Image 1 (spheres, rainbow over the protein chains, first blue to last red):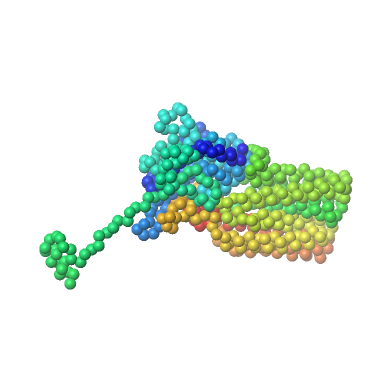
Image 2 (image 1 turned 45 degrees about the vertical axis):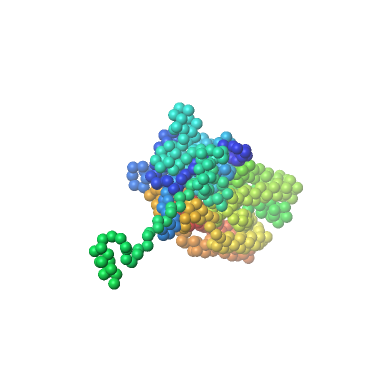
Length: 243
Length: 314
């Protein structure tokens, strides 16, 4: 059913918090995502021309790099982009078959590949480019929040996290319940001023991004014409050159 | 947005088919069409064939055409599903209309009612089709209130040219139909010009600053894309080929889609029955070609917010 389940107060909203301050742009999250999802229970995440010119394929997580601002306050920011598991996901309501759905129990947005007809309308409806069409399988693919990891009791407990979170060497990715205001991820969002991407699209993303921290601008000591201390010869040279 | 042949053919052909069906139902109720049951059946079947061509083309767009039947299940939330339901439903009153015309005569109550129901269902299908586009918020050229009147008026205009051709081929003079075609052609033209003016001046749906949330630092520029090659997103949503020819293609769409069919419709009126049999079908076909160009632009000029992440303007 592609209608959005009615939000219950206090319901689980599993999602990611991505720290744009600490992300180093190493693409390990994207690579581990690809690795886990290409070898999981679903069909492989298709690649075309993998070992030839113009290789391309389906990825569920992609890392962009941006420059923001100009001058000493500008920043280079690495920016992982994946499904935000929106509270109001337009990709779900447009689905004509019910293949796209949002789980009532934890808010994860999924595609049932067995009934997806591959009409691609959901990828048009997503403002964020979170969905990529698998030309080989003929169905739409997207981030599952590693639903086959986070509930997987065959994995050691510390590994029951999305692959991207597990692999991040900078600890820039956090996974948890954003519906619980006391959870670690919710506190992180509150402390650091986590924000939504494209709030004007009205999708109410669950995933939050943490802004780069403001660095204190280093204060350069003003240069005095005749510094008092130091070598007397250098002071004399300084006086001569200053004439 | 990628102007896929299958989707453009769907909207152009089914628009003309449902527009023609709508005129058949309405003009028959007003007793303005030839009474011959063979004309009635032939015209209804032509209109259904046009829409069937469109629906068949749309299945070519699917990754799994054999599962297309599933698309009628989510009519509660999805305009695409509603379009599928209405497209299938329309066949029932339309075929009933043709049968009633044959067996009960065109003036019988049942014929008139079935014709009007078929007309309403056909236009509702076009409206559902328009709403698929008009509700996609990431694409500002589609998510605007002029898309629905544009697609409805173009369907009625191209439907009128096809009905005029059918009347002429049947050996009659399609005076009323041709006049309605010209009138709706002018209305569709005005709607299209208003649409083009709007998309040329409307503000963006989002900005790189809001897409990345980095606007508090300053203006945002893309330094490095995630991948060096193309991907699905850039092919489907980032289609930009030939967008620079937009002005010329708009002129072609105006000439082929509006000017030539309107002139030929008027020529068909004065030309008499014999010449009309040739001129009016040409008008219908050329008009459809022009609307194909118009619909191609509707896709090619549409920009999607995902391209913001790749440093493009929307």
